[in-house]
Length: 303
Image (cartoon, rainbow, N blue to C red; front, side, top):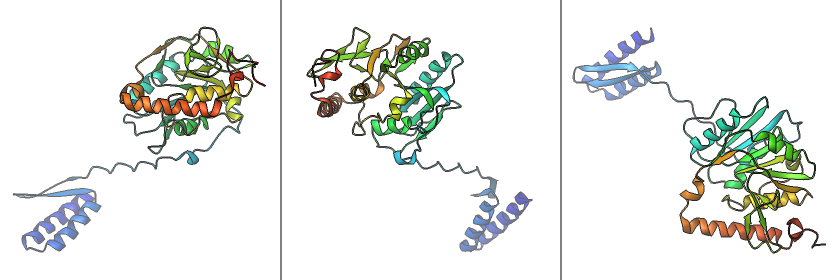
């Protein structure tokens, strides 16, 4: 019935246009569109077709303070895995699929923090936080951490792909109450924190951000990434030291992962990434300089 009415109005509109009454013709066009049809003028008169439905408006993107924390609630899944999409969503999708392939019977929550709009959507079941752009790496990561429902929490970079059971070894390591943070890539430094080099022994000074695992209680005790880290470099060192400052150890644990190209590193101009990396390391030093007691080499030398 609406199409019949729309055709009648379109014919009337053609008559109004022929008579030069363009105001009435425009009003008739609006009535036709309100019925769900679009009219187009042609040499023969007019053509009419149904209008495409308007795309639903995108929900407003979030600020960190818009994200409610669940950390006061009891954990109700085994592991929460955190992902940050600053571009290259295909990397994060690959990572999610790889961890799911080796989850076994575990209940796993994936939290995806979308720092920039990501076309293509996310796998079913993921909790997605679409954040406002320009917040920086740490503020986006912290927004995601607030949603952790797992007894264990993994922070994973999009360049990391699980190639086997990563869960079991990390669960075993963190079952030790003296362990606070674990992961496959560890680093150590000297007592002056001059630089970090790859760790050789399981106990180390920091776990790198390719894959960092903690018990949820670490978050409940207030450990977060420093919001001032807008770039990712050294944020993992700072986080690791904050965990160790609780009196806990950092453990390098062998797990089956494949490391792909780190997109943020390689997409940042060399001069810019050098500047950002240096600034972040100074930020780390400003907080932890003098805390040789938190290093493996300097344990017991302070206080």
